[in-house]
Amino acid sequence: MKRVITLVIVITILALTVVAAASETPGSKEDPVVTKSYVDNQIARLMGNGGSTETYKAIMLTAGQKLIGHEGTEVILRSGEATAIDNGVNGISDVTGAMDLMTGQKVAQNHLLLIPRSDGRGIQATTEIWVMVRGTYTIE
Image (tube, rainbow, N blue to C red):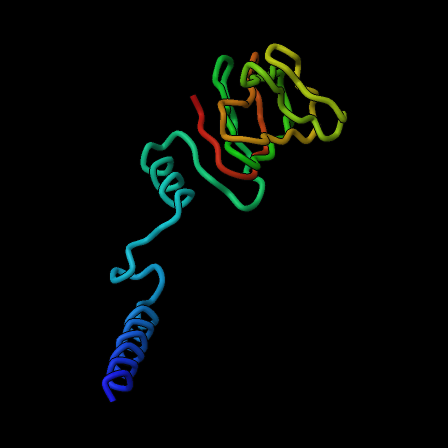
């Protein structure tokens, strides 16, 4: 009899725990857990020097400015001249040209560049440039 009562209590506690956990709406004030990418996007938005976009966004940079991409960011140089910025070990993937661009190498116009990791890789404008960006980035 004692085992049956203990089993009923344990099952009741587990059922109440599942019901309580399921009643919270994800993303509501009652469920404050957010992802790191959400926090990064909100910080970049508040700082006003970067952002994140699901579609390509046209951005103008002046000479000397840097666009640093985060993991998975895609960049296409539309006009002007720019050079690549690597992480000291690996370059930026030039998907169109089927090669890696290392720091100082000229970025070809209309080539799709892919930033593989959030480790400081990007491009630096040598003249005024227009780029199309998809993903999370910062401008320095």
